[in-house]
Length: 488
Image 1 (cartoon, rainbow, N blue to C red):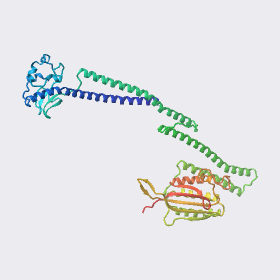
Image 2: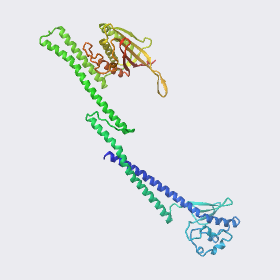
Image 3: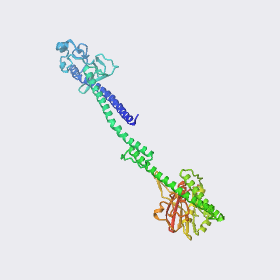
Image 4: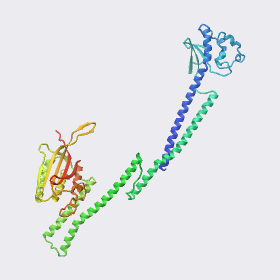
């Protein structure tokens, strides 16, 4: 079943159930209220009779001793009509001597009333026969603001008079018709509402079909401040990301092809030169071929490392280590490379407190090696390299329950001397295949992957890396890693 009809049926069913419940509650409330009204009306109809009884009570010395079968004949007590009622005053005049006229209450008319019970102030029966186990309504008889007796009659639990029944049935019928009309109106209103909800979803579905078909430029123009609007924005964002990924993939393939083509072309040229006799196959030729093979191998290794890092498959064996010692050991091992490029090293470490980090020794050495290769390739001979390692107190963290937590970072500053990098290129240094030297001369070497790999290694250690201009005229690389507090 289509979503439009599912929403329509859901809205209609919900409305119908709510309206039916409202009808049931309203009908029950009306019946209960109307029955209460009938009972109160019965009580009001007894007021003239109560006045007559009180008048007779007061005229007999504030006593109920006069009450007996004969004296009560003039009062309509059980609701039945009597012959004396139709003969005028008859025996009633004697029974009511000195009393208020009995006819003033209207109880001498030929209409039925409820069976009644007359009791004294202690609710002891004086006249009448009613079962006290049934529910009774009690009407106090007050003389000089004192209760001297009660009139009681059975409470009604259903409407039994024809007029009242007709009235109740008519009101319930009106409520039923109103409920039915509201259900029909809900059905009519559910149609446009379901359409309004489904129409944007259809447009989203069309957009998804377009994007899945390769049309990443397709965009949704749905401006809504609700979940459907968020869905449309997410679909548009997906299209943008897929388009960017496609462009990046195409650029990646082009860059890889270019990087692989260059050493292969050199190898092919030198081998063909030997084959054609242009160049002799001596030790120099073999060394040149070997250098090109090594360059090609390094490129393949870098591509493999970068791809493994991107998919999260690069292994990291984390352990507690002192970054100061790691730097000293690394530069002691690679001092010859700096001497080969005539670059002076100045290493500044923190001897007061060890710069402890949680890291992988092999990957961090690879990070340092990539930075050193970058410096050696682009720094002019006779240049300088300054490496600093220090502990820096980070900004207070107030994000947890209002508490302030002081943390430290191990910060490594890497300064090299000229030449520098122009401002437009600094932001691209950590992109794959980017070189600060735009001529891409092989004299400068490198595949443009070293800093990209360095950035991924730093991120894997939950750190941050950035580039800026160096005070020495070259490049400043700053790395910050979380400080590992040693247990005491």
